Image 1 (spheres, one colour):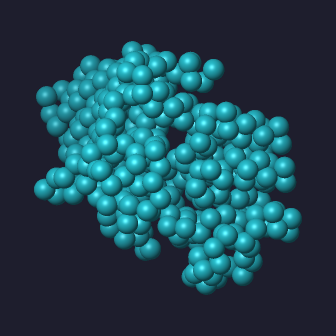
Image 2: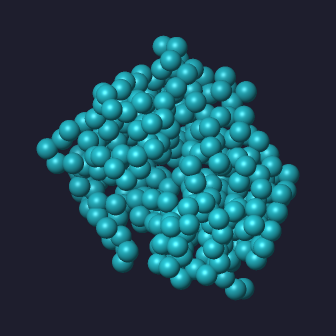
Length: 344
């Protein structure tokens, strides 16, 4: 079987990482790119040797000649592009957040299901090798039955210099970063049933919240805390590390700054360095994120070839997006919100 052929829509800040990942991937290659900005289109096309270039998604799909599309645009364009791909019978990867509203998200999942095409959300944080190491340690039974956990991302890093649009939206940290941490909590602790959230805007120069704390109730009785901040100034900047704490009936697990994993059980502590490898095109401190991009893209290729649903499918991601919506509702109304209320 030959390589799967892909097209990329959106040649902005983060899409360059995706293009590097596709170039290194086994079993797939990008044959066409699309962006409404001719300068960005030229820059990416020249950098990666892509000759087929489009400023119109309609023209891209009309010409066809690819098996899947990777949509790396901002959220307001997602529904229209995903539904366009579904109409053309093209398997689709969509950047997170999946959509601006739950109604849009459900419509996108439905459109792909009706057309019989695979649909995955690029929810890459759970593919970071340190987080996979946490999952493996828990699954080994080393700390017994998990009853409590924490997923933490606290930083003072200037994310706005590379992505200035993040400073303008009324929603910021939960929708942009918290969504990743919430998905990690689902991946590690299972689906959640309810959330209680509090938010705050510390930076006066932005429109949305830059601090969020969310308490999750999970199926099976696990309680987790998900906390995110872009207003936390630390002596050693941890960006872009996700730190974790997990308590179990037989021990504890801690993923601390510097990619140190400590698993304490039976009176002994096993220490492991779980720092991800720096790929040839990666640049620290982004190498953690960049590796996860390559890993989720490889997962997509393998799932598409095998005809199975990817782990972060659109259907699965509705549960993660529901946590985002429930968190904003909880923070706005000062109450605990059940996921059933948001999912409908």
